[in-house]
Amino acid sequence: MTFELFATPYEGDFFGLAETLARHQLAGLFDVADRAAAQGDEAPVTRGFSRSQLETLSTGVWSPSLGGLRHSLSTVSQAGQLSAARAQAILSAYLFGLTPSMILDAPAHAVLFVGGESIAPRGGRVEGAGGELRIEVRDGEGVRRFRRLGEDGAEPIWLNAETGRPVRLGGGARAVRATCDWMRLVMTESEADAADSLRGDEDDVLAMVERATSFLETGAPAYYVWTSALLREVVPLREYERGTRSTSFVNWPGHIHLSKAPLIPSVIALIHECSHQYFHLAQWCGRVTTPDAPLVHSVLKERPRPLEKILLGFHAFANVLLALAALEPAMDASLRAERDRLMDHHLGLAQGLDAGIRSHWEAHLTQSGKDLYLPLRKRLADAALL
Image (cartoon, rainbow, N blue to C red; front, side, top):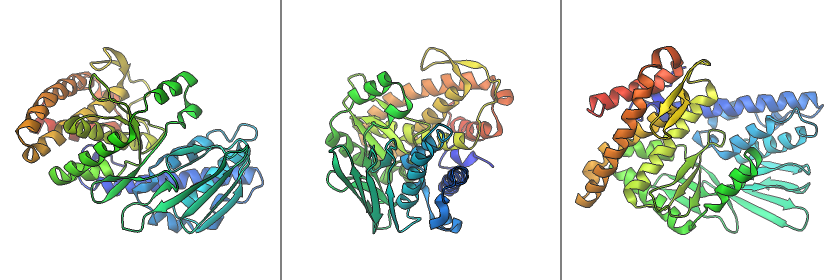
């Protein structure tokens, strides 16, 4: 399998490859769920739909629901975890539109992921039909309701029926305002608390995302599709006095954290984090570096880091440079001045990261890693950016 299409949005049908690989990951997780069910004398998770239905799904599969399913299945060997994994698998099939309805009594220790939220029903009941979902949470927390939004041709999303609103990503896509509560499942308590403490003004950040994606849609259409195809959820962070703060996570697809910023830094952050989505999707399919790859000096962290982290950074910063170059005709004088300042900064970082990769790429990048690196490096060199 070639990942050259994930080097930049200019290499070919990156959207089609992302669609195919996202479906492949979901099918593989359903296989794991069915094997676990068989070992526990449970009915197959996939009995409610045909495997051919998976071929109707698009890039919306690359979502936190996929990450939640993967996480729940990673713990099925632990006592009592099969029922929790099965609940998430059944819910995922409904959320992705593979089954028209669902009913289950959620196990007491299950955590379900839907609409940007992490919900522990504590044994409550989960019912879904007709594009609606009802989760009864025990211990006095009442009922959480969600609705499916996706009747206008855009990729469907699930929203909290009472409090959710879609985040418009230009004219052809949407995302969901999310929480970072899921991090308590996979990170230390201090890391999760630190992330939660950074949450900021939701309306300002989401309006910023909408403005930035609209600007991309008109000024750099290829990077608009690149950004919107795999972006599912945004956690708003408070404004950062030293610039822009943003984060994404290899095990939590389509989910980013983003702080409020002016237009050009916002565009940069979106390109950066959404470039990570393609890199992470490639990582889900296999290694991008060899097992014996060395640590390499990072100009970002000013210390040695794994080679795959250096490649991850180069992939994001280099795509930012290409996007900023493509956007120049759409900018007025003030935006060009801001772009030039930030482009110089990102150029230095990309060149520094590239210097760390050049000595090791032949011996220590896998074919997937080379596919991500070489076409991107050539694009920069052809544009006199390296």
